[in-house]
Amino acid sequence: MGPLTNVSPTAFQTGLVKIIMDVGMPIGGTIIFLAVCIAAIQIATSKFNPDRRENVYNNLLHVCVGAGILGAALFIASAAFNIGANYFKP
Image (cartoon, rainbow, N blue to C red; front, side, top):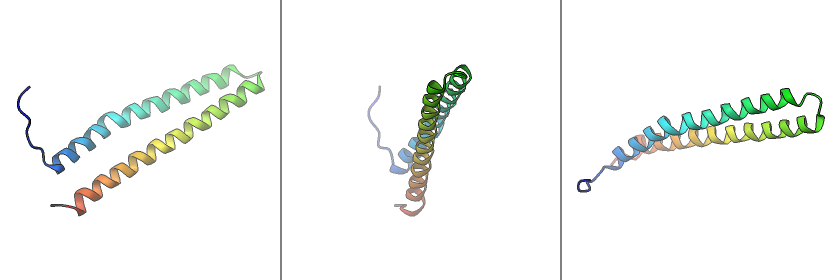
């Protein structure tokens, strides 16, 4: 490992956005996809048990809310980075 080098804020921002888009979005999408698949399997297997089916629907609602929060967070972060890059140039 060599000596530390100075990195400009723009280069840091670009690298951070690239990491978020390349790593964060696929991981979040995969987790949401798996959660929906598991909920679908649970709905199919709880056909004759209304209490369990209600619990699965509540869990699916939580997955949808989590997906909305994740999408909103990524949107807001992307918008903030773009505003910072475009309007606050040194």
